[in-house]
Length: 299
Image (cartoon, rainbow, N blue to C red; front, top):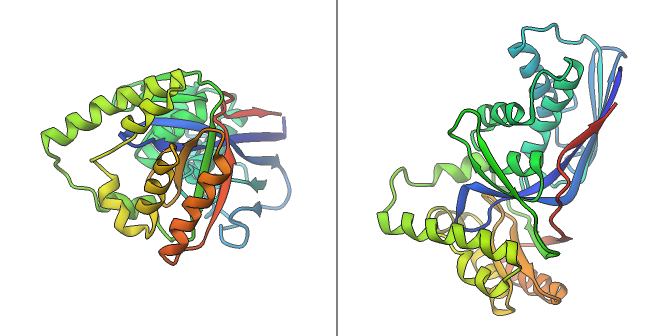
């Protein structure tokens, strides 16, 4: 096969207390077409990241593709055309870099005869990116709990009831790497316990669709307090969502904020965006749902 189409979903990590172990696949997708042939390695980007992302071997999709070929000691194709149609906003906390890495690895794995399982693809993504939550959600779908320090990683995927999600993406420049630098190397035992029991409650609340419990559970002491100062209006946006009965948290490292609304998703979106505007930050809004459908491909 000389052509392959890879589709990878957006994802939201942490969900409050589940730092580096909880992820949720979202119904927002990047679709990339790979064609062997042409003249050299060329990339074309449409949608999110157009005009910003590299359109050569510096593109993260191609870098991940190349990494697997190198690891398998295989000869890299000399001619490869990559067409990216991106719906996931970049550097938003919605797993755009994970989607790019997975896209490249999935395509390389396909053209190499699919020697790697999904768990092995996950392990390799962890090696490249350093954390597993977004990748596990994108590769397995639904709500996932992942233990990434094990070889192979252990992943549990949970089916969820219908949920209305509001994701507000503020115009704030923030990379995950930058946001991680602020986190302390050591934490208080009481804070670790706080997050442990709430992580378990987040899983239960989402599986049961218990929004009242989720309001209590979706709190955090390990990463959000250190990241809020980097994202003006984010803490106020979370409080505004809470006041309307919607549990909310940073999506991954941010800057996006994700909220679990009832039938008042529009009101939640408006009040969150108003909170960002009050801090002098413009934003855009997505109305999304979780997806049980994982990354997939066809050739």
